[in-house]
Length: 258
Length: 258
DNA sequence: CGTTACTTTGAGGTCCGTCAAGGCCGGTGG
DNA sequence: CCACCGGCCTTGACGGACCTCAAAGTAACG
Image (cartoon, rainbow over all chains, first blue to last red):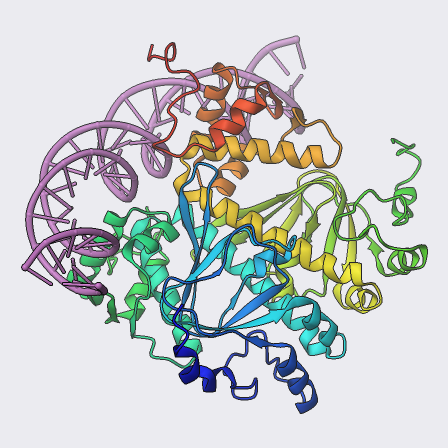
């Protein structure tokens, strides 16, 4: 709504794909200069999304996917009963909207959790371009395949893991994703609320809050509001791999019975 | 549509794509005869898998996806701790192995739950062929997009839904998939064991057993071993949409504890 | 400084997992 | 035919993890 911000940010909007650090979808690596400029031409740079602004809404027609240049988003769907379930968080450098490729319609909504810059990639043109670039052709499949794999990971955890492991897994997952982008991985800011985390993990807000407190008093993390500091990333990672019955405490005395 | 299956299995193997009822991946509909024969050439028909035989194993290199002609499969992965988690069931007409597209390696194993006929589709050749057929190009993305969507559905349920809703949802999901292939949808055979179902849904074997018994005494279903009869599909569908807090029982007045 | 949204903390209830024992059924061998 | 066996399934009692309800504390924003 605030149009005067555009002027100051237009310099950002003009950053070409050469400078853009997003490699997931746009830069398969083996691209030559010619392909890169071609890609640069089809990618559309939108103006920044303010916090709380929609990138897209469930039910809208879609002919694109989006690459998140900076900032973070959350996506969610509304169940037939009217409950909102957070389905994902997207950090700088990640790809949003793949699920709409199924039938050209968004099945969920996405909004900015903070100011976000997004590149729109029309899927039709991307595919046409990718006909000439084998590496690009595989890249989209790779991204979707990885998405499938991640979802199966989460699904495997969802039931078997228990709340502490689930939350710990969430934290190290965030950490890993920041690390992949070259950002600090032990100290970062949670862009989402406790309620968002709870909804995403299928826990309650209270349980998330309690567990964060517990992790802190165990010395695993430090949290102040949304500033998060992973003090023992290895221990957290270990905790994430425990199921309900498995490991009660950071250190298990007798671990083998074979 | 039952031919003389006894004559020789090779007769089945020689069924061309024209006759094959699988439309998910192979037959985008808009294909002309030329494309269909081209597709027919790249699809490789394997010999039938006996019950318990592997289609592929986790860790194997992969350059293909598979279309299930007849029979059923299950897929599972082994956690770092050594536990086996069932990740999916595949019925006649469905596509298996998409997750391997991420990095060309299978992340899970798949075996036949009964005698199964499978078509192998080398992904490289499929893509090359699809360059000339726009409809095919979109088809693979569609299938994967739908897969993404289904996984998100399951994930949304996994935590929020509670065991009865989860199991009910599983049953109607199976029913829908049979219906989509033109098979009986309210009476069919469960190709998998209770333990498989439990692992897949993240429940225990005992809970699955108890709930099936409960559903039966509520008149929702009839089960004898693995023969399943959905007596009130609508009620089951309704039950599947209830969360823990939501709907206690089909009928409030007469469902008191005995 | 007041309002609102978010977060923390506590107490009680319940669903479902764990442990344990017993049935059903097909297969195998006497 | 029966006895025995092993896989699969059923049924029961118990306890714990996490949800629900409730209220107070804190940060964000005008």
